[in-house]
Image (spheres, rainbow, N blue to C red):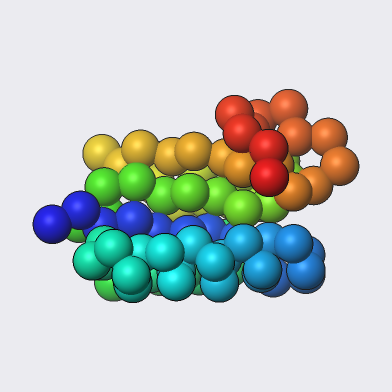
Length: 92
């Protein structure tokens, strides 16, 4: 089974809304998922078992999540909901 994590910016309404939509989609499609604010991503107990982390926020959110997964074999994808989003590969 695939496992997806969502690291998000808790101060962004759009990031929180996207987190809820994404978790709902995962639930409906039988995908195991977790969500944490980006600064708490490293606290996820099963981070090593996570196939991918989708970051919902801006560059700061992405950098915090990237630091958390740096020592794992976990893919990371940024979805920009911030102002600039140089590091993100997708837009909401």
